Length: 595
Image (tube, one colour):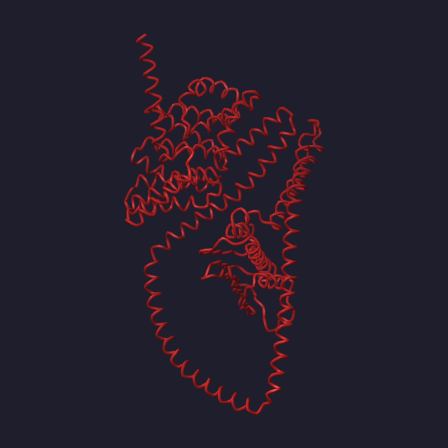
């Protein structure tokens, strides 16, 4: 009886130690299902920290805000920004361990969204730091993430290196034994050794499943689902896939959702349930597109933050120079105003006496008749302008409505049809020795892949989905990403304080930039393009410049269709546009729109 009790207490203590160690290697705790009040409390903590200049409180608030968005926000617009701000304040406090802890969280977020290169760069630097200070928990976590990256890159040598290091840590601290078994089995699954993995998982992870920490349960259940799926044990595969689905449904979209959809598709393919296969295949394709777009946004955000950190070091000097320059400019303007005031007074007096002299010579009836005629012309012109504006509104809104309809038809109908054809083609049986038929099938599949890609590109050009989901800045970034290559000019995009825009305003700005960029690519032979979007008072300002061959505005007798479309969009927004262009010196557009 006593021996049973001792075994029970030993098991309980081991379980608690495992939970504690895994928890200390992870990020600070936030509620499992945080409420809006929790998010607001972080904002309040940030405000109080700023008021009292408590850098420790500010750093913690930014860190927890980053964790909150990483785990519970689908847009994740501010994750990188929050983590970088936390790092900056921890640097002021000289808190090196916390700096590298935040960096590990950032690397894990990049890895979840398929930004493998960025994640690997951060983790490699963190590994050196943790090896120097012999932080076992943090070291185990970093090596586990590097092992995942090695499997993603199919780098078996690096995988074996990281696994040996994890095993060495487990020998010193056996609380990591379960996770070490997980990584070992995961590698064998990657190598295709399914029977061994099936036997091993039943002897290790499933046998000790009570010690699985909630933080690791999703990854482990995904691995178990993959093993049972590939071993064609449908009942057990569905059981664990259901556990995975319950977990990922509470999380933002990331690589775990993609793994769930891929395994579900594989399971139904193996059981020849093609309706379910098609459903999960379509969901996987849509999510993969969404994650690819968001990955590009995250990469751009990371680069932007790197540049911001460099700019902060010179901000004070720039402000001092600007202050001196503004003082000199104000003095010059003051002197110019005095001179201008005197000249204006003289001019007004001259005009007054001239008008008075000639007004006495004119007949009163003639003046009244002339004024009435002028007023009539102005009213006619105002009515004509209003009519033209209404026609322009109807035309532009009709165009965008038709583009949206065509985009949806292409994506939902033709795109789905092509994917269905490809899926059916993959399951057409071909005799093993019939090499020409197999080659022909592969050619047709390649053409279908190309067609699906073309449909997706055309649909995105007709109606950018990122514009509604993420806003004008993200939509423009996506547009510029698609114009990335040796055949395109280098694009520099800046944006400052861009407000939330109405749908038609944002869409018109997007179309203007799209048309300007098309003109540059087709005609300007430019190497560089500079685009800036900013808010000044109550106006949105768009500045567009390229270093191409330019054109002569004086000799431009008839506007091209592209420039006509741009002018129509600006008029639709009741904005103003100025063009500065010279032959051989590029072109510059400046557009102001009230918002």
